[in-house]
Length: 112
Image 1 (cartoon, helix red, strand yellow):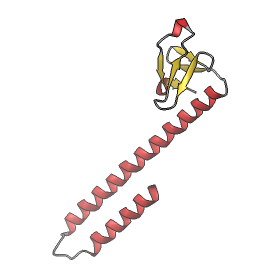
Image 2 (cartoon, helix red, strand yellow; image 1 turned 90 degrees about the horizontal axis):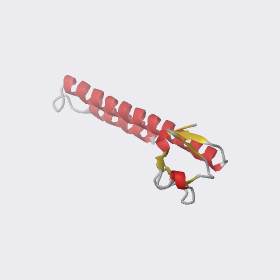
Image 3 (tube, one colour; image 1 turned 180 degrees about the vertical axis):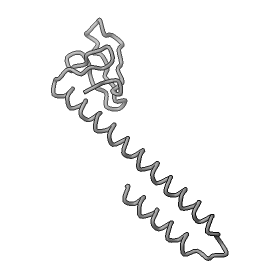
Image 4 (cartoon, helix red, strand yellow; image 1 turned 45 degrees about the vertical axis):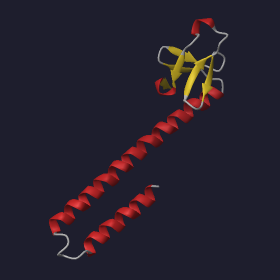
């Protein structure tokens, strides 16, 4: 996806440079190019952050599925006490454990 966005950025910059002098002044061209570059950079940073978050979540899920205990806020999550709900990316306490009844923990609160 990043490659496609980069190629679209290059295409837009080239189209701006080859446009007629009467249709766009040089200062307008510079503003348009700067705006496109800023939009591209914002998209790149957003994608980088999402990939890092997704990798962290995958590592937490793998540790849970391997039977390891994970620290999530004030709780210690393992597959003996909690079930993982992939649709909401959360851990829900099993019904047979009275002390944790009704506890739902979002995966974003967990540390590897």
